[in-house]
Length: 209
Image (tube, rainbow, N blue to C red; front, side, top):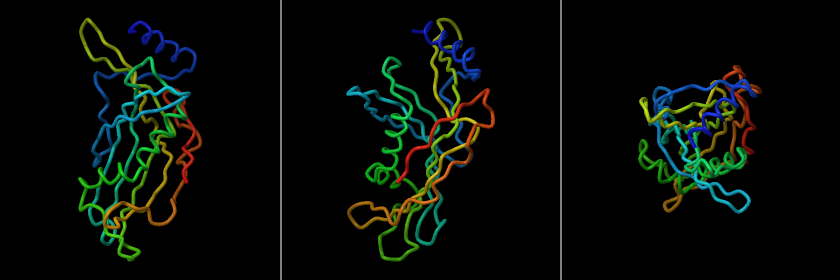
């Protein structure tokens, strides 16, 4: 397996021109003010299920809006738990986006953030705004777990070039469950192509409704 991964890295560099960053551990490099959390997401394609480990950068700010808080959720990195079980990038993207938009997952996450969900009181300013960021540009990081023999290698797909697909939603709590208030808005891509095509490559943005 290690020889396969090494050969794959060489092929990536030769045939795509994409460089690979070498690091000794999972890249805990969230922007300042963000906290990294990890979650495992099942991805189903053609009847097969692969489990992906996804690293998210999250930020909570109390009092950004009257009676509410602003939350940011940024997809930062991902890797399959089993390297022999991988899915099409678009299928993986859709599974991740579905997960972080799921109200049950959000309710569990936000309870440990700021003052919790604001009530659905009919007040148009009583909501939690969530800004989502999904990478438009990606890069490979080549992980070395043992710095001395026997070496153990792994690749992880990480956000690159600071270009993201973005969308925002508002939520409130009706006393028993989380609901979305109003339509999704501010849906856009921060760029068309990556600024550094040697290090990064671009993928499509998710179809957000």
